[in-house]
Amino acid sequence: MAEPQTPARGDFPTIIGPDAAFKGELKFEKGVRLLGRLEGLVESPGQLEIAEGATLEGDVKAGNIRVDGSVKGNLRASGKIQLSASAKLEGDLTTARLEVAEGAVFIGKCVVGSDAAAKGGPAPRMDDAAKHAPQPVKK
Image 1 (tube, helix red, strand yellow):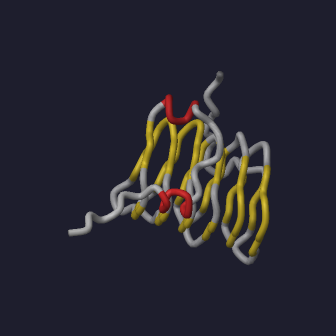
Image 2 (cartoon, one colour):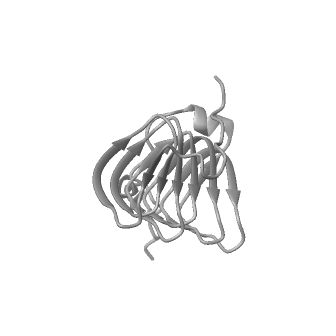
Image 3 (cartoon, one colour):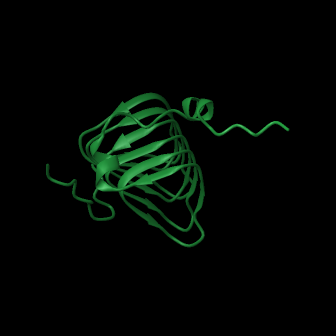
């Protein structure tokens, strides 16, 4: 299976503007650049970029994901996830490749490798992950 190509910066056919707030399920084929606020599920074989100042609350399954803004939710990428210095991610991630810049904030679990990305399926929801979290030992 061919690996998704990372589009050049600015090569996004769809842009959700800084004054937009979207709630629901977003599916797209090519690249989307989020400048505003999105709450819900995102699925695409393409590229998703969450710009600096943008917020996303929900789970994402995409080819490649770049986070410059804030995300509360789980990310799964068949290609690469990039967390820039301004990124804030609270959730779990699964990807074939991971790039984390100094200064990025990441709170969650991480699975990286071609085997992890090949398993497919949506990223586990945060409430499901909490059910399986290690429990403190009672004395």
